[in-house]
Image (cartoon, rainbow, N blue to C red; front, side, top):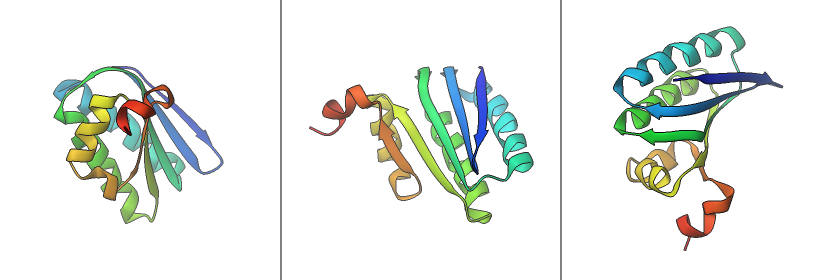
Length: 112
């Protein structure tokens, strides 16, 4: 699973694409954690715009990055979630740990 990492002004954005399952989540954790150690950002944004499939491993990916960031006083954003991904993240309680944002064109479906 490809991930594009962009660091600007104390913010690291991880643009995710493809499928997130047990195997790809391990790769993503490694890539993102290396970038967190290197740049030490104040905010990590996980951009799900290019994600075509995800299972509960994506929730674990987000929770793990939250733990890494919160220990250093950083914040987490989870962006461009599809309606089903948004519901999965919200049901997992992640809205209390991170800012969750649906895809702009899907906001009406997520927020009826």
